[in-house]
Image 1 (tube, rainbow, N blue to C red):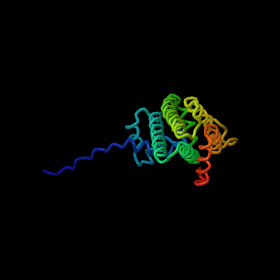
Image 2: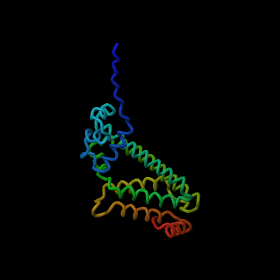
Image 3: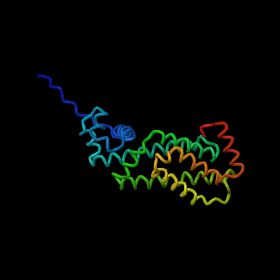
Image 4: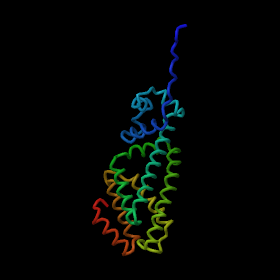
Length: 213
């Protein structure tokens, strides 16, 4: 009896691999410029393999990319928190991290996500804002406990104020107000308005020791 080889079943494309690849492409070129077929081509797969994981189409993929980006940012911020010994150092380190992100020139992705998929964007922003509010609030409480920030600060108001300043960065004219420079200046003024003399001293010492702060 002749032996007949069984046809191999196609291996399903890993969803996380698709999302990672799409994120790279979207951050480089924006959402409009990258089709589902181009994501598949980068993976050396047929478009049907990508659609099998994202049957709802591009909107579902963009949603997954935003979620992954947010999780990565959260991980990086939590790592910074573990590495920094003071609240002042943490805020300065966050400024460096955010400026690095801005230097990557990925603003087109976020603007297009907001314009093309407003419901997805609003959902992502709600999760992101909740995390960042808690992160900044915790920083303010830590700074007060360390006597580096003024004891009478309204931490809830200031955390919301910081969020509003970050939103202003996204809507500002990038040619008139370069985002990285604007962010650097905003944080400098924010920090100057909340530190005690001891906090101002720590800030100066950190910036003298680590010029990138």
